[in-house]
Image 1 (cartoon, helix red, strand yellow):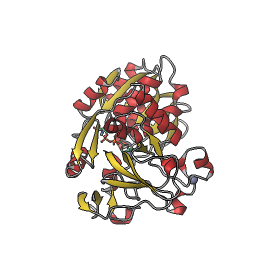
Image 2 (image 1 turned 90 degrees about the horizontal axis):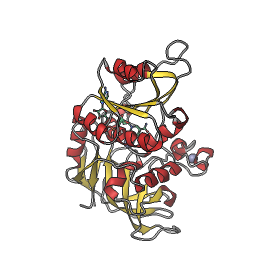
Image 3 (image 1 turned 60 degrees about the horizontal axis):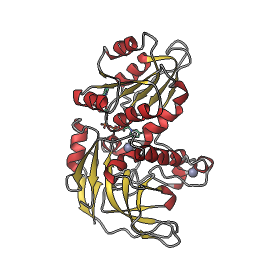
Image 4 (image 1 turned 180 degrees about the horizontal axis):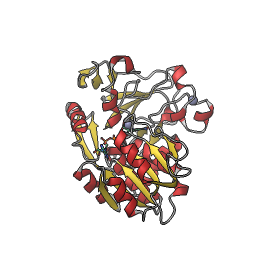
Length: 346
Ligand code: NAD
Ligand code: ZN
Ligand code: ZN
C-alpha cells in the first residue's frame, strides 16, 4: 500500500510503498477514508536527530477516520464496513488516568512504549492503518468523514482546553483565541456553542481573521504589538476570563499574559516552546496557566456529538495522498485556511 512517511531528518515527507498491514490479536485494520494534517507534524519534522522521540521511518497522520476492513483475533463489537474515527492519544487502558478515559495522560504509556498513530506508531496517512484496540475507535454515526477527521485533534484538543474553563466563561465574559488556524477556527466555534462568552480571535494573517469572523468570532484582531491593548480596550480594561494560545511562541504567550484578567485561565496549547513565568505580581491575581495535551475518549464522543448537532463545521481543503507533501508545504508556509485533509483512498 501507499503511505506518507517522514524518513530522513530535515527532509520533506515522502509517498512510499510499504507492506500491507495485517491486524494482530485484539487489533483492528482500518481502510483510511481521511487523515488530517496537523501543525504538530511540522514541528516533529523540524526536530534535530537527537531530539526526535520517534523511530524513523514514521508513517504520519494522527487524525484519522476510516472503515473497518478486518478484525484481529478476539475483537468483537465492530463489523467490517463500520465508519469510525480514531481516538489518537493511545494509553494502556488500565492505569488510573486511563480508567477515567484520560488516555492522553496515561501514566504508563512511556514505560510501555505505547505511542499514538502518526506520532510513533504508523499513522493514518496510508491506505490502511492498524488501530491497537477497538476502544480507540468511536463511531462516526453519519458524520461526513472529511468534515469529521479534524475533530479527532483540531476539535478534541481545544474542546478539552475549553471544557476546563467553562466555569470562567459566564455571560459577559470574554474568551481570546490566539491563532485561528486548524485548532483555532474550531475553538472559536466550540466557544460559541458551549459558552455565552464574547470571542476575540487573533492571528497574523488577514485570511485567517476572515475565517475566524465567518465561523463566529465577535472580533478578529491582527496579532501584533498593539493587539493586547486592543483586546484590553474591548474588555473595558478588565481583560479576558480565558485565553487559548494555539501558537505558544514568545510573542503570543506575552500577549496571552497581557490580555488575561484577574482569575483568568491561560491555556498554552501551541507547541511553540515559549514559557510564561508565573509568580506573585507577574500576572494578574490568581491567573492559572496550563499546557494541556489532546483530550479524553469521552470528550471525543462529545465533540462528535456537537458536530452532529450542526454546532461545529470544520473548514477543510482536501488533497490526494500523492499531494500530501504539498499539503505540508502549504501548512508550513501558512497558506492552509482551516484544516488540510488527505484522502488516502481517493
Ligand atoms: P495551524 O498552522 O493550522 O494554525 C496556527 C495559526 O496560528 C495560523 O493561523 C497562523 O497564522 C497563526 N499564527 C502564527 N503566528 C501567530 C502569532 N504570532 N499570533 C497569532 N497567530 C499566529 O496549526 P494547528 O494545526 O492549528 O496547530 C496549532 C498549534 O497547536 C501548533 O503549535 C500545534 O503543534 C499545536 N497542537 C497542540 C496540541 C496539544 O495537544 N497541545 C494538539 C494539536 C496541535
Ligand atoms: Zn495534532
Ligand atoms: Zn494508562
